[in-house]
Length: 462
Length: 112
Image: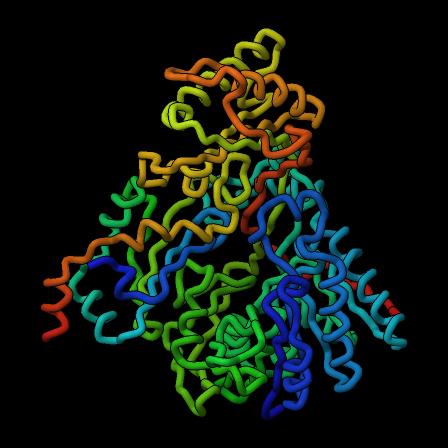
């Protein structure tokens, strides 16, 4: 077991695509395993709540094919984490169906070990009712009511659950919600390499070539990354010569999407990188050592995630060019909102409970909301979108229709136009855009160390 | 002098669904060190810039290896909530570009 080479073909399956030429270059390094994640919570709660993927199917299929052809050539296990984007049951099925289609099209068979990470809600309610399940990065404790109102709840699994699947000797591990770093670390850890080093490797390569730099003239937008773990350290380099990894490019990536570049909470403990040392060993290759695993001796904890359905959204998308309208935008939105409330309150529909009204003013503060430091509008044009969220799509549509006419024909101060206050962007002017979710479960759950919450089954595809 | 004239990378992104994280990465080790020593990027400055209570702004993290300064700010809305304005948090860095650094304080540190 003196060394173990891993390929990270992409930052996220189905998103930007794998450079196939670069991947073939990576295979020349004679990899021992390949790993990629297929999603996260980053795109927001909708995908987990609805069961929908967050990437196009054709692109996911293309990435699966490129990766799976690599398995055939090299007999290396592949770990695909956070199946289908969010790792729920529908996501796993969608991802598995694509793997199956690819296997049939390339005329090969693969053994797939599937790790389910969905938690039973009755079990979770019982836990929430009898112990304190703390929020992850927030102060809210998990309650039975939150679990009851939430959609599917998944746990983010770590190295240990993936190792159990790898023990079944599959070609592919398809994991539900999984920690990105663990997808890379699991196979080397299973083969006896240090967990701290392996997870640090995973942390750096999990976003593919985001840890590298394209040299001027490089024609590819992304390149696969090759990492090799040895006793006490790992090295990291891009698969192609038109990219490089440097101490700084790697350090820069350690900051990415994290509050703390020195320590990171992982399933079962903490990855401590505060004593890690990086050395440039060739123009494109960096050596990293000194990272440590600090096991949580109290209990093995995982993060759990779940989204609750809030309702259905309608959008009335408009633009405005009239200077007096732009000057009076707050007057218009207040008038329109109050008019909606006055219409629907007597009908027993309470704003903020039965439905929600939101204006997005593009050109004012649509990007930063209350954090926007500029309080004045300098634009000659604004985008004005009225949003309504209600329990049904029909109700959201009815409220939007009523709201629309308030906005379009209200008499703001200095109004010279009587034909209509805004330009409609579309016909139909009110767009039904479907379900809205919010994240309600983002908590830390102690589990038993042998990972019995996450059943594994194997299937043959092709 | 504006921060954007000294740092080639100034970016924001979600760090989980409850926080935005802002990274300022320098090319020059000397400029990074001078800005760190001059103490011209502080929690107070960031809180004022974003009109936030200071408790919603993290300590400033200096990451020498990456020649980088990091600061985390609490999201006004959880990522993807009905009233959220930036689901992935990729456009919350803009006010940082305009931080006005007292150049004499930075230069004083460069001379040392």
